[in-house]
Every structure is written in structure tokens, then in C-alpha cells.
Length: 115
Length: 111
Image (cartoon, rainbow over all chains, first blue to last red; front, top):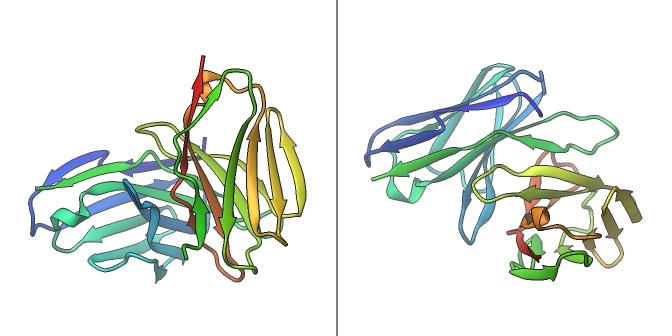
């Protein structure tokens, strides 16, 4: 299994509070991704990183920010949590190899509930 | 039109039969195609990837790619109850370092 951990694994927070989720990898992969998964919507990309301090937006980036100060860590911050951000959040990593396959490997997920 | 489309199911298949999962995509420049399996409450797990037209086999799994028709499929032979899961199709579009996922097909294998 790819060495990916996410913390916390579960969190309940109140509307309006800031929340930071952490993704940590031991694979030294260049690319890291944050997704959210909701019933009826599948996996949707929030932000991704293609190197230290290099990030870009995904399809559902509003209300989220990210930071990557080290290769191994990718942080997702909800500046002011809303109930619509209640979801399961997955981190994924990938590396370019075997041509341009870019297969991604996923962490265990964080279940976030905003009350 | 969604970029990657899958029938959400549920798809019910008897044990021992062949399960066939389909996925269509809209971007003709798509280059790499992936199948993930996700058990309830767990994270997606990569099963196979394919990037050339034709078939690719790995054990009981076969991925099929037809770029002209813009579809990719996954066949599971000798289906087992442990194959019951949601299967996600993902596509890497040309020039991008990210994947676009379909909504997934829920597969149930009946003993």
C-alpha cells in the first residue's frame, strides 16, 4: 500500500470555524491531490499540487485553500466551514512513471461533519 | 455533458458470471484510463490502467479501450461476492496532471 496518511480521520466542527486537514506521504511523490466525495457527485477535485509551493485549483475550490511547504505534506484548509462542506475528503498522490500514466493512490479519507 | 459517464447501477450479477462495467468520456484527447474499486466506507483502490486501444488483462480483470468510440470497459470474470463494490472510472485528459472521475457503478455479486 502507498504510504499515505490523513489526519484527523474524523472531525465534527461548527459552522464558521476554520478547519485544517493534513495529508502526509512517505513515497516522495511529486503530485498530491485533495478530493471530496459526496453521494450523487462522485469524486471531485478541490486542489492539487505539482511540487513544493506549486498548487492549482480543481473544479470545487471555492471555500478551500491549500499549502505545501514540504514534499511529504499537503494541507487543506476550510477558512470558515459551512454545512455544505460536510463530506468525506480524500488525499491522493501520484508520480509520472511508465510514460504518462499518472495513476493516483488514495489515503484512507477524513470524514468531516459541519454542524 | 459530463466528461466521464458511468451507469450508476446498481448492477447485479450472479456469482461466477462475467460482470461488465462501462464508461464513456467526452475528451478525444484523453490519454490514460483507470479503474478503481471502492468498498463502502473505504478509499478508492486502483485495479487497472490502460492507455492503448485493445484489451489488457490482469487475473480475472480485463480492461478494454476503444478510443474511436470513446469508451472504456472493465470485465470481471468468475465474479465473487468480494467483488461487490463501487467501481470508478477515471480519465486523464491531454496535457493535464489530474484525473476526472465518473460517478461510479455499484456492483453487487449475488451468491
